[in-house]
Amino acid sequence: MDVKTIILGFLSYGEMSGYDIKQAFSNSIGFFYDASFGAIYPALRKLEEEGFVTKQEVIQSGKPNKILYSITKTGEEAFQQEMQAPILPPVLRSDMLVKVFFGNGRTPQEQRELMENCMSIQRQMLAQSKANYIKLEKTFDPYQKFCWEYTIHHLEMTIQFLEKKTPALIKEPAYSM
Image (tube, rainbow, N blue to C red; front, side):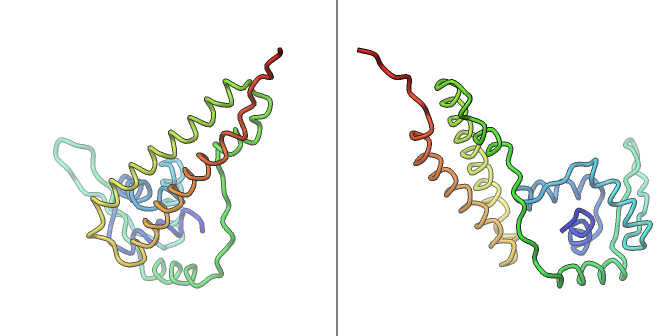
């Protein structure tokens, strides 16, 4: 699914600014699909050109004016049509796995640090996900709750896998007698 379709999904809940949309990505689906402002604003322009969203400038005193985007009927139809399309296989992009893939050329100390960093990042992501889940849980519908629980489960399993497999990856120098 592309950024434009996800933006339409967020806008189906109500009007939002570009900043609000970025927060929605980060705070709801960011674990499995995130988008930068550099992707969001061009997508919003394209959606407006296609007639899928409208924008309204809100005058604010003492602050820059706010642009709020709303989904149109055509946008709602396009979103519903995309939701009915077949599910594509997931594309996993992982900086962590690329670095591990090329880990054989590192020293044992570098390998150890790499794997410790991998586990540390996963633990941080798990802690943040659990904290956000607790904070937002009452606002989730059953499908959103499923996605959050999937994310937490995935992080827990990743940490367990790393803990189990890391010792075999780290090359210890051979001791001479």
